[in-house]
Amino acid sequence: MVNKLPKTQKKYQLKIPSQSDNLALIRELIAKVASQVGFDDEEANKIELAVDEACTNVIKHAYNHNSNQIIDVLVKTDTKKITVIVSDKGLGFNPDKVKTPDLNESIKAGKKGGLGICLMRTLMDKVYFQIKPGQKNQVTMIKYIN
Amino acid sequence: MVNASGTKSTSPIAIIRVGGYMEMTTSDELDKVLDGLIQKQSYQIIVDLANVDYVSSRGWSIFLSKIKEIRENGGDLKLINLTTNVYEVYKVLEFFWFLRVYDSIDDAVSDFENNVPPMPE
Image 1 (cartoon, rainbow over the protein chains, first blue to last red):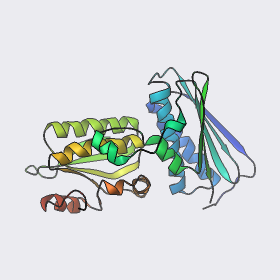
Image 2 (image 1 turned 120 degrees about the horizontal axis):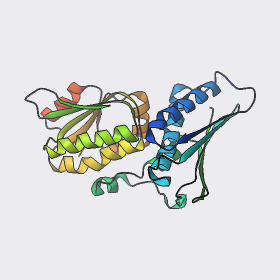
Image 3 (image 1 turned 180 degrees about the horizontal axis):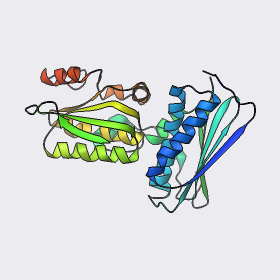
Image 4 (image 1 turned 120 degrees about the vertical axis):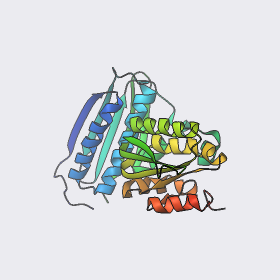
């Protein structure tokens, strides 16, 4: 529920080495900003998880665990929504080819992975990708305040 | 943080207690602990998520990837004490088709002891 609304748009940015140890810091930023905007704990946690998934994808797939690379997390808020843009300059992928995983098939194959983008799309109201491999890959996630 | 222990010294049931936010690093720890139990042919496994704030996709994927082998060997993997946030994602991902959740360790142990099948038949 809405309990605090910012009077103007606000912007926060975190540029941080691409390593899993930094995920906690990113989640902390998201939790604080989401709370300030007026998301309740449950909704803030969903946003945290979606951003964690996006950043994990960057660490694992875009940068292949190279911690010398940088993840750029930009958070924008206004009275109606929070927008989180996660950018990298690593390997890209074709988001159109990422389908909702068939969990039965994953079990049969003993397969790990494939749930991250599915979770992001489910937890946020809008998720879209702009992929330019090696130049700039971006995932933009938006959540509206109910 | 991931810890594994038994319910009693004589019990074949293994309890894994996970704490914090189950993201990439913690999930990989869980993966290793589960592999260790499977290697020791310990197939009756309870994962206590009471102190887990959130389970990321990596964590859920690890559960999925182990179920087949565990069940083929007559065991099961049961989740207990899910927090509201974790239960929310459990529902979102529709894991209720594959994994049973319990409110207490006693309920999960009881199902093992009474040979309740892993999922409804």
